[in-house]
Structures are given as C-alpha cells and as structure tokens.
Length: 555
Image (tube, rainbow, N blue to C red; front, side):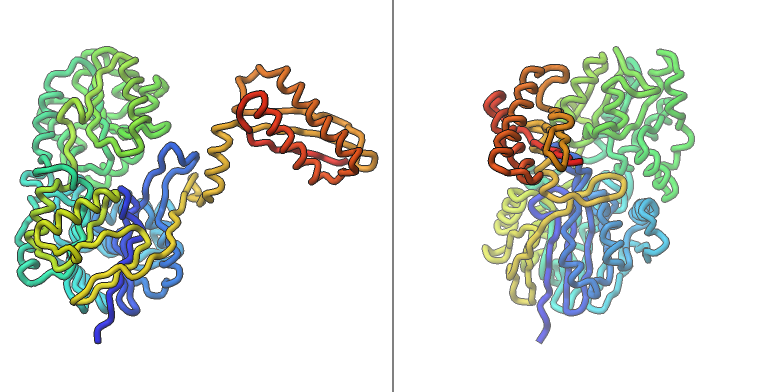
C-alpha cells in the first residue's frame, strides 16, 4: 500500500509573501520556495519575517532540496536562515541562482551551499519526486511552474504566474504542457490566488512600453521611475526606450545596481552599458540636459531611508527635485505600505514635482493572473483536487469557489492556512492536522530574531512613553544620597512638565517614607511600589500609564 503524501504550507497561505511549501513522502522532504514578508509599521524595529521552521528542525534529516520557482524576495529571502540550520541543495534557474548566490555571499553561506542551476524541461530527480520546471510569465524573468511527479500522482504547482501574450522578456506562456498534463491526469493543482478578485485577463507588459514612451518623449524636467529592482523586464523597457530616444539612465539604490548587474551577466539588459551614467553625473546636469535623463530607483514602497524617501524629504546628497520634474511610481502599492507611500508622494508634490502612480495612470501591470487566467489554468489541467495558494484568506476562499465552479467538486477544493497538514492519496485529499505556527521576526544586519513580547513592549513605549526613576541610598542606613530623579521620553514635549515631575518626586519620597514605617526595605519591594505608584500618578494627571522603570541603587 502506498504511503500518503503530506503537504505542509509554513508560509504564503492567508497572506501575501513568506511563501514556503513542504512536500513530504516517507523519508524525503522537498521544500518549494523559502521567502520573507516585509514588516508593517506596527512591527516596530522589525525588518522582515521568515517562516516558522520548527517542523524543518524536527525533520532535518528528511530535507533533500530547496526548489525555487523564481527570484522574488518573498520566495528566496529566507533561504540564508533556512540553510544555516537545515542545509540542503538549492535548485533554481540561472537568474534566480545569481540572486540567491549574492544573498548567500552576504551571509557567508555561498561556499558551503550546493546550488544547482536547472533549465525548463530538465527533470530534477529525487528518490520519491521528479520535478520539471515549465516557464510561466510573471514580473520577474525566468519564473517557473513546477510539475511534481510523486508515487501517488502528478501535482502542478503554478508558482506566481500570469498569461502574458506579449511579455518583454521570454516567450508567452505555452499552454501545451499544461493541457497535456491535464489530459494525462493531474491529481492536485496548487495555484496562485493573488488576483482572483480581478475579473478578466491581466494586462500585458507591452502596455507599459507604450505608456513609458509617451512619458519619456515629452519631458519637462528630470524623470525618475520607481520600480522593484527585481522587475528586470520593466527595467529593460526603460533602458531600451532611453536608447531609442537618445536619453541617459542612472541607477539609484543598492539592489537596483546589484540586480541590474546580475541581469546583464544573465543575458538581459544587453544595452545597459550604452546608456548608463552615474548619479553624480545627473546631479551636475543643467536644467536642459536633465530633460534627457531618467533615474531608475528603488524605494517605491516608501521604505524608511530609501533613496526615494530621502529625495522626497530633500535630504539626498546629490538629487534634488523641483518644478517640472516627474516621478513615475511603476509598481503596486503593497498592502500595509499605503501610509508610507502616501507620505512620500505628498512630500514629492511639496517639492514641486509631479507624481504618477497606478490609480491615476497606466504605468503598472500586475505580474499575477486575473480570474480569467486562473479559470483557464483550472480548465487546462483538469485537476482531481485543488488547493489555492499565494494569497490572503479571502483570496483563497474565492479561488476555491472558482475551482468548484469550473470542474472541481465541493469536497475536492480545500482551503488551508499556514501550519495545516494535508494528506494526499490517489483517491483522497484531506486536512488531517495543524502545526503551531509562529512566524519569526528578524531585525538588524545581524539577522537577530525578535520575540513577540519585545514588540509588545516597544508598542507600549511608543503609545504611552517611558519614565525612569533613579534613586541612590546608603545600603546601611537607608539614607537617600542622590535623587530621586525623574527622566522621561515620549511622555511630554522635551523641556515641559517641570511641576509634573516635581510632584512625581514627591510620590517617590512618600513611598520611601511609607516603606520605612512598614519595614519594607528590600530594594525589589521598593522598586515595585515605586513602579505602581508612579503609573497611578501619571494616569491621574495625564490619563495614560507610561512604562515605568525604577532604578534603586544601594551603595
């Protein structure tokens, strides 16, 4: 009797980002993608999140490979953290491999990681799995769907995809492999759900080319295009148009420079060297020459201290924007970033620049399939079972409904969240267990993880402020030698609150007097009394309870 195949999502279900899927059969685990999710403003100090890898740790010896569908951060960003604790060979296309290798080099893992570059149609053979990559269209070059052959049947994992009939790089997605797989029999389809709420067909990159040409042909000043550094097709369009229109291009942002270099080495952006100039060269141009220059920049999401945010705040060392200049935001506003992006756009307008973005101009098309394409994928592959992936929970629900309406029975399309354990056989597909899932928060260049209680404490300090009460006394007599001093941050505007703090000192002295009469002389007891007393005092005066840290030093 054949074993059951386990499918365990530890990221990417119920959210956009953090994509990581485990396929387990007997003594073998294949991990598809291993990405990050960038934090929002509520996660104070946190740079990004990575999947909970507890199950990987428990089953470390079973992990045989990481297979990557494409090179976006939400699919490769967590690899250094996974490989450090759970090493295994990494399989990726040429461009994704270059992005991964660059990332692993930064973490000191490149030399110790066994990386394999695969080509479309070239099987990756393991003990229980045979995986073949099939090209799809997406907002990054060399995106792949995976055809996963297992002892119980074939699984198609679409990865992030769209059906683009005129992509800038690569060929339109070929439907034949998917149709043939459907004719031969697909046991399970796992499909991208991101744009299921959008009806019809997604727009082609070709549309952007013509809009860019219109914009670049009629400049009134410097033009800055903000785009994801991984969108090599979009970058390629800007470079081609610059060459066609006799303009120069400058790259701004470390990831923009690095990714463009890697793309050039991979055979893309072939005209890059013909049109590039430095940012310093742009800064030296007069007003007429600025019209013939385009800056390609990162920072489209309003990231803190990104080059574009510094320009918007008029803090960039070289680039200053003003009347007549144009900023083209050629990327999607990722949910959670809207406020930061809005602040940045307002600041750019205050400088006198004009700003174009998706809701006011046709300057961005999605890299994900709309409902019409998702429906076509279901009809081509004719799966016996269906599991929507890559999307927020409402996306998964609507995608499952779409599948049921197009050939999948009510019980054949399941919905899951991170940590769910699905078991698949030739005749059944069921959710059988759930693993506790606690995503890991990462901050700083060292990649340190942050406990949830730390974020809670930071949020509390941000909301209510913090107060320090410092007191020095004689350890033998209990006589006060210095203090009490009251120091606060985030409570009141600096330089105000003199009377408030003088009365706070009186509260501390009163607690000390009471303690002396009650023989409560241990420092730990006094510290707690001071903490509680000051919180009550500030609440009575200000209506909020700050974080209070009493410091009592006996010498």
